[in-house]
Image: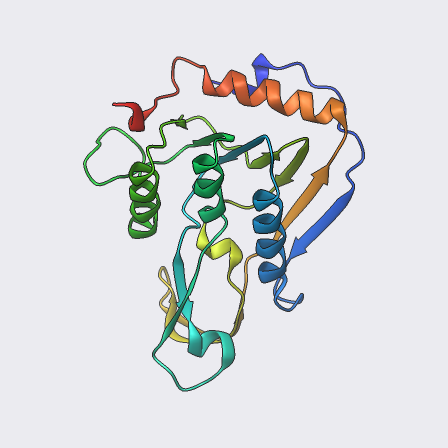
Length: 222
């Protein structure tokens, strides 16, 4: 099913900010993550997130790969999704939509590759009584609606999108070829921020449509 065919789109208004993440922008992922966390924590009305995969919640990364030190320790980051749960607890309108889902005991959904991190997030949602989580196997959109701003992105809401490693040293980094990788590892992506009322309404309508499709399931409401 082509979800986009159900929407009438007008041209997007000019964005107010652009953010890029890339290996040649040092710590760019840290900057974007901090920006998103700050935005979500400042929300007063709503936080909607649509992402193919959603698991950027209390994850860890290698201290050695980040700082080039001789260490086996891992550093924990709260992730973009921790303040999302906080906003739910504060009574804001919080809704989530993804293509993949896995809580360990609910079959019938496409599983994300990082099952452990995803299940940790779902467990966190369950602990706080969160139910407005839609899953639709046709959804591939990636955007945030925070109060009256829209943030579109090419990146999923997963740990790999928010990690910048300067000193990777892995003998079998690429699983298909088993080739090594030494040096920087960082995803490449774009975030665009829009604050126009036209763009906001367009994305609110699209999000509502997708959340209310018959194909969209709500596994946390069972």
